[in-house]
Image (cartoon, rainbow, N blue to C red; front, side, top):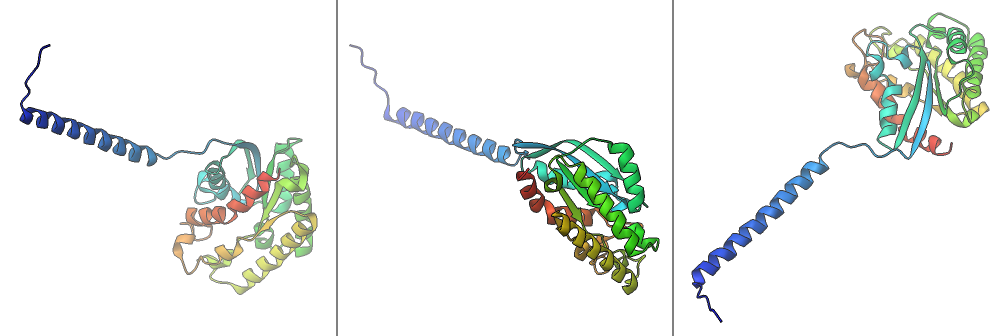
Length: 246
């Protein structure tokens, strides 16, 4: 049998090398784990839906851009919560009243149905001095259209209240405008509740426009991208709960 004589000092050096190598492996693994955890990821969708958004300038994102409007931000929020929107249609235009929205929607949507349908309309009826009585009839028609084009009827529909443009530099805090917006919103809420459709109030958020300039877009009239995001965040989990029931 051959016996090798190894000096104790060499053994200690070898142990030290092994220890350093062990530490390097741990450090490298830790760094990789931190980098991986900081990488933004979306949850794998557990539900996929189609979505129809009906409205006017507040839905189309006037003065901020379509992708910064609340329907698009809402879709990102849904995506982060494992709900993917595979088919999205936007039927909205700045200046539209209820009658104009209904007319155009009938042409564009036809008989197509969607899992989720949102409705935000009425500010131009108020702006153009249309009577609350005529608005009530036309809003009812718009809501009926939304329900008809929801795959599961009223269960897949929600309504947003009309923002208050009195709280912008353009509106100058007009109490008259606010009173009329309140009157129109009371109609929207009453009809929505009568039909069993969720009604989400974003008007209170819009009334921070004069105290916080970041809530108003550069045109001094429409909501900023910041306000659109706050609207979306305020309704996100209610909408998620609604979708889970579909």
